[in-house]
Length: 160
Image (cartoon, rainbow, N blue to C red; front, side, top):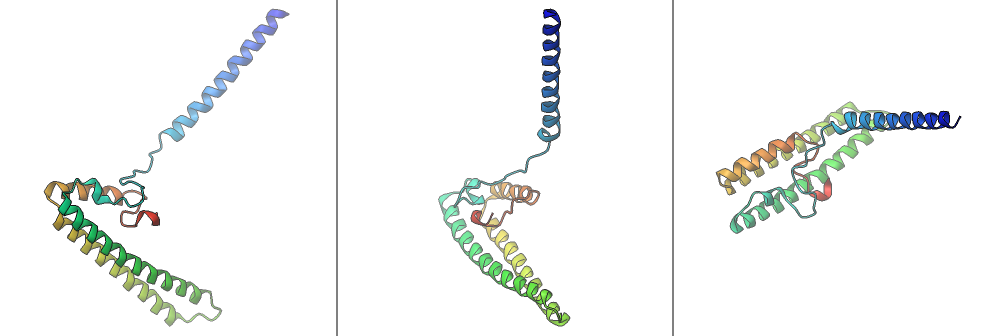
């Protein structure tokens, strides 16, 4: 009887070990092999992408002024965009919908989006002029990498 009890406990222990290993293996296989989002840039406050390029002090100063101006322009357009989106939602929520007002609002939002695109492209060209060839390669590699991630390259870290 004593041997049967020991055998039963050993079999029970073995079954529990197999169950635990199966669950751990399952979780490792299905959750451990999913790609993690690539973070190209630091999430520290006041850290900008250009700080990873090994800039000279002159380049650093130039980039800081470019970044400040760029972020101010984007913040202003994003504020305007928020107001226009709120206005569009209010128009859509009304009982009597005026399609002409909705079209005007949609067009205003499209103009703001186009301005944002122009500012971003202009900023990229300004940055490119500050960088040497090796820095440009690294910069555009980081840009390409960030475009393939969920992290937005152009927002201030406080906006992320």
